[in-house]
Image 1 (spheres, rainbow, N blue to C red):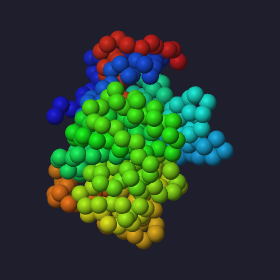
Image 2 (image 1 turned 90 degrees about the vertical axis):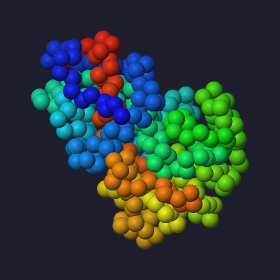
Image 3 (image 1 turned 90 degrees about the horizontal axis):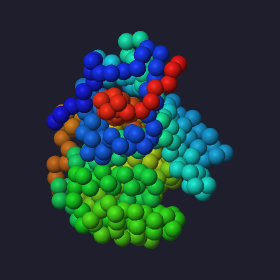
Image 4 (image 1 turned 45 degrees about the horizontal axis):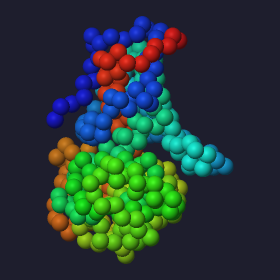
Length: 344
């Protein structure tokens, strides 16, 4: 697999007091889902090879506006840049015609600390790299042949996760559940342009989960949406909504019956994710976690081994994903002489 090149020596940059400014539209033009899945895989491998410096993320809640802000710094050793990402989710925004996700990424020269690029992606890189992680989870843990997938949620991640899933698994039917019927209708219309699968709205999360072979939960829910009794043999669940301690999409019993629990980061998931709730109430212990995703990608641990296994992947998002994805965007922008420079 071709690795993202982290060395930018010889590439044209601005002067020491110039910062390359890239907009979401420019970033979108150089970053495909296939690119994202590829480089995010390299990021996970680096994370589990001791090649990254990834501090624990900072989270801030703005409860009166249903808002949250996450700050994630990261560095790949021997790279010429490091990044600091500021990402936000404001879940009332769709009511006033604004997207719920936002943010930007700052790239700095790792030799001097001088700012090199400001990627005003409005959350696009975060959305893409999160979907890329979901695709990798499914590639490692879902059955090779699936008939029916399901998604719980109708927002940006519900779209991108399924688009990414379609790059690693073929499925004939996609079931979708959302709280708002109008949003479900819009989701079906939009995704019919991207998928060949039949898209079927369902009336409950139970209908979504039962008889599905892959289920993706993509909501900011603070109470479980998936019950243990609905989970059948051979299912894979990717839970990516719980990226702060108060969020939860799965009953803890779902992790209790799983044959394999996989996480992006044990340190994060025992404090933020679905695993956090299951460890806290005693359903599982940290020792019950089978692997970090990067360990499976490196071949250090096994993914799915039997058709009937129940697998769960808890994704809270790690900065290694941001580092490699923003680095790829920066590299391509420099080569294409894209963006504009601002003087600082």
